[in-house]
Image (cartoon, rainbow, N blue to C red; front, side, top):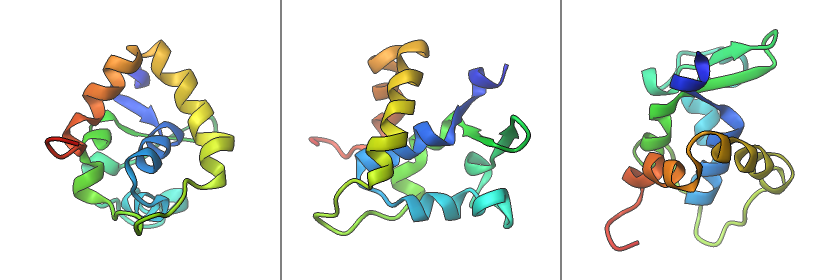
Length: 115
């Protein structure tokens, strides 16, 4: 089952924003919209479902955000899409897939010690 190995891009985008990284660098990492280019690495290779309308990336991408993506400039706010789309998707995803503990474990490698 795809949900065992992959996570929806909207959920990853919520994590990207929450951790202070840019959506644009995530889009580049997955090979741009519709994967017109090769992904940055296998952790960012998208899988399309629902007739190409939903994108998923391997769960390992969650642990590579700080290694592979660009940080936002200091003080940059969350995007309007974060509140309208990404956070609601993440709020539905995580409770059904291990809850807050699973989320924190998946994102743990992105946080420097003491943060």
